Image 1 (tube, helix red, strand yellow):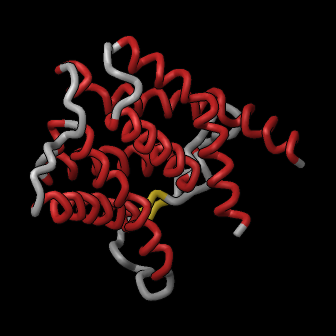
Image 2 (cartoon, helix red, strand yellow):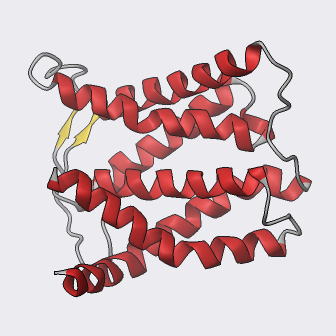
Length: 204
């Protein structure tokens, strides 16, 4: 219970910092702030913040080289079934939001490529944490991303909902997901450890 509360608090504190930054980026791009696409963007950065919180990526306060790994697929499947399921569920929003927001993710291959980048990035930076770099995390995360894409495909198959939602300028359509990813990553690495500590100390 406390783990989920901590994740929720991390997302909240991250969004307090990131909201004005993202609104400024959207304004610079000439997009309408009050749009469906903007709502989707905020969901996207909230999902990334939650994933970074759950996976425990390093930050400038806490990082050290501690390389432990597992390269044998599904070795703990029957002993850690819940963990496998949570890893799948964690990436479903990624696969769901990408085709809703950006043109290049209308096919499953694009979603799979971004999902692969994201999970491999996380597993790589976990070399500098106490976490284990695990092939199972990569496989289950990719499955989650594909399930998210499949869910979008099933929901839009029977209707004429144009995707992505709120088509915008070509530059934003090509680079938006990377700009927002970088914004969340920088906030998590440089600001979040101090801001989160202040937030928790204030509440407790």
